[in-house]
Image 1 (cartoon, helix red, strand yellow):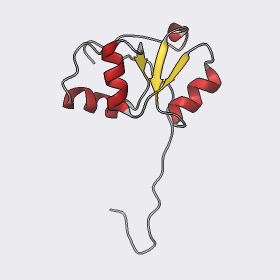
Image 2 (cartoon, one colour; image 1 turned 90 degrees about the vertical axis):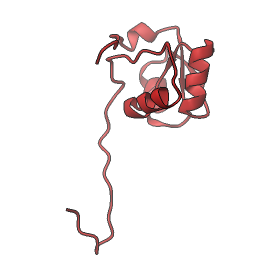
Image 3 (cartoon, helix red, strand yellow; image 1 turned 30 degrees about the vertical axis):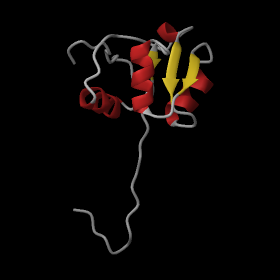
Image 4 (cartoon, one colour; image 1 turned 180 degrees about the horizontal axis):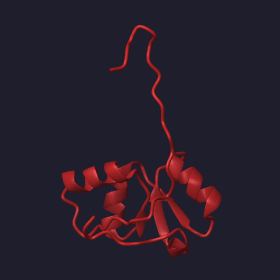
Amino acid sequence: MPGMKSASPEALSGIKVGLTKGGFPFQKLSQDHPSITLVIIKDDLDGIGKLLKGDIDALATNRLTGQYQIQKHGAQGIVPVAWTLASKEIAIALRKEIRPC
C-alpha cells in the first residue's frame, strides 16, 4: 500500500496508543506489550480526532475500519503501518433453516 510505514510493537514502546477498552487490540497489547502506553478512546472516530490533535501518537484498530473512517472524514496526516497486531479467526452461526450459498 502506498505511504504505508513499517513498524513493530517494539517501535511503539513509550508512545501513547489509542484503543477501545476491552477489545481485541486492548487485550493483546496490554498482555503482550506492557511498555506501550494505552489510552482509552470512545471509538475509532474519537481516536482519529485524538491522533490528529496529538493527544495520542498511534491508533490501534481494525485495518479496514480505520481506513474507512480516515477516508470518510477526510483525515489528513495519518499513515497506516504495515505491522499487524494479530489476526483472529471469526465465525458466524446460522439458524438451521438458513443454507449458506
